[in-house]
Length: 72
Image 1 (cartoon, one colour):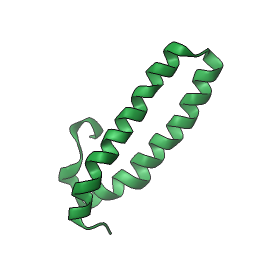
Image 2 (tube, helix red, strand yellow):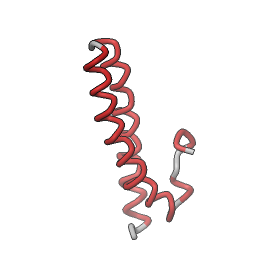
Image 3 (tube, one colour):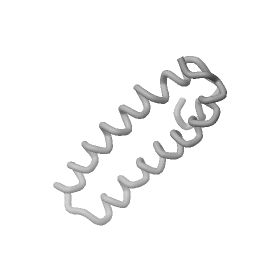
């Protein structure tokens, strides 16, 4: 169980990381062939899924008010 003060500190950093990593998908799409793009999406998808489900969701389960609208 994460303390609320800790959640308040790490949540903005984690959310920023999530969305910045998501933004890289468009960059790779525009600058790679289809095979490279698909491989990248698969890898990034795993990271985003882990970050959201295993790191952020437990924070929001305890502190639902910290969940940004874009992740609702």
